[in-house]
Amino acid sequence: MSGPLFANALVSGLLLAGFYAAVSVGISIAFGMLDVVNIAHPAFIILGSYAASIANASMGADPIVTAVALSPAFFALGLLLYRFYHATFERRGREPLRGLAFFFGILFVTEVALILAFGVDYRSVTARYIGTTWRLGTVDLPLRLFVPFVVSVAMTLSLQVFLSRTFFGRAVLAVGQDQLALQLMGVDPVRIKQIAFGISIATAGVAGALLVIIQPVQPSLGREYIGLVFAIPVLGGMGSIAGTLAGAAILGVATSFTATFFGPSWAPAVSFGLLLFALAFRPSGLFGR
Image (cartoon, rainbow, N blue to C red; front, side, top):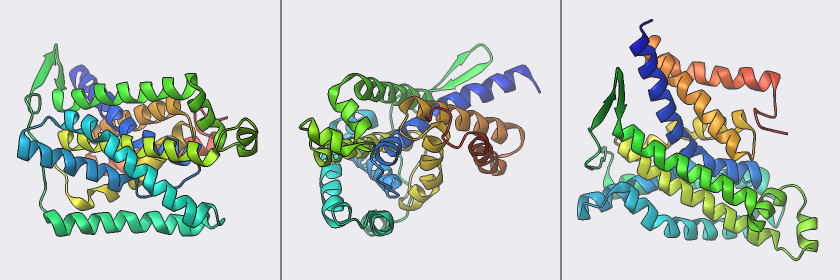
């Protein structure tokens, strides 16, 4: 094993881990904190990719600028979606199975709608940093991975600070544990969950813009991320943003090393093998209680 090859594999894995954190942090909020199994989360990631691609093709807008500009729209979409989910399933006590089927339906309806509107061709974006690679000694630093890494880590750390140091953030952390206590404090648990779910969908829109920077996208690509977006929060510890970062780092580095030294086809097996190994010895995840 050569030193430069090892170093490049490590750096690529860490950069990939940043993107993994972006696609998974919304599930850490929705599933880990709110107990909402949003299996359609990858569909909103792809919607973010298509929004960034359309804005880039029509106006030349940078994908990250588009993601930030459209975050309020994705947030509002999350508010409406949770309100419907609560009224139809949660309030009636039907959320475990029927709610899961509801989100599965959204996943496939979104995919079909994108196919009907845009076809199955891959879409990509252009930006000055895409295709540029910095060289630090023997290590290559492709900006198409580095820029999403920086944006993702900034977003994830900002969420960690927000959820740990504000009253609303502490209410989100408590809503899945003791809703009655929140009500006694004059807090509406449904409103808290609605806003938190809106935040989770907004992160998916940003992650979609990062995805289309890294690789071209097409409507069915979201299905490939279903396992990943749930595996990372489970590995790191449900409801832990720091755990999401740690889980993303582990799977990102494992994926990169496996693809580099054994071939890309082995990467999913090794990554999820690590997940199963961790859960066998620590079912609550790395940062779980």
